[in-house]
Image (cartoon, rainbow, N blue to C red; front, side):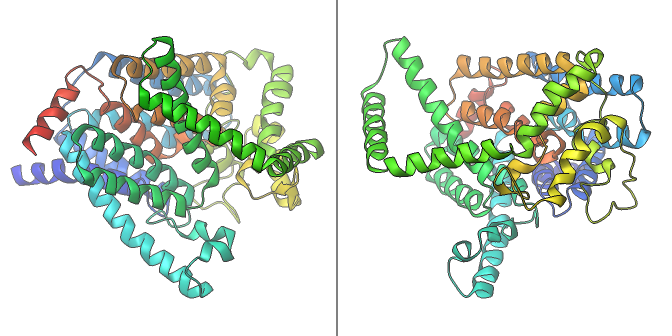
Length: 443
């Protein structure tokens, strides 16, 4: 039995991240859930930390308020089941990760990256042969959808995973100065780019820029701007100025395209925000505090049970039971994706023409109270940065909360898993860096 326990301890992180990035996220969620239950019955040892408990309590409130609201706006138990099923991972993972050594996670992530690299390479070569070119992305812009590693058909899933792993390995390099960290970080970055999930890639770079600006601003306020920071700031300012002057026509063109997009008819994502924060509030002011309940409005569960999202038809295990709120506000928006080829002068199949947003979901299904709790949670995460000043941590946190604007990412187990990994290994407790330092010394 002791050998079984050792095997579980050694491979559980690898299994969890792999199960979160399977071709079918539902099967992956079930597999991860069963495994977590098994771990809980055998090897679960929760190491309590004040900040850990506070943040997990915030997630619990964000999770439970829509459950209570659902009872007041009852639609169908099927909706509530899928809401709980898709949202509960954010509450489960910290219990399993609380006692995992740093080197275990590091080695598990290395194995995962090497596995994904092999699958990515195979997929890329298949596309190269299919299109008879070494750069299939230049032939077909949607080719990236087929380069998704083990998340076959879900390139956005793998892109987000690789974005966080890029930051994880960079953070490892800064603390250990081992070049292997840079190599793995580069591999993750390249796989993130190859997926072609442009929304995630753009937010990744925006997060880096915001982190750089915040560090420069913080140093300037404290009058401790280093020579390197000063040189980088001046260089970037000059480069940006020259770029704007040399490419002024491109800048003007891009501005006109943006104006064109929003002047005709706003994309569905913008329309969904308008509907939620205008029409929904006007017609249901009593629901503004606690929301309409999980699975009843715009969560992944609501779209799954709405009968439109899982095309061409819902599988037998996801009955179609749309709520009246979904039928009134979200269904007409989603229907436009099938009626029109373009919306707002953009393809109806693009990310910006999906009415998905975790921020919108938290507000509509959990009310203003849940949104305030989410804001408090973000402040807690930033406080960790201000106290420890980890180089990659702030980028990861900015990326995490910005991704909540463009999709219902909390419904994906890989997102929940990577959130806790990011927090746990960036000084959730005062002694965590000591553990990392000891590990670095021993190796």
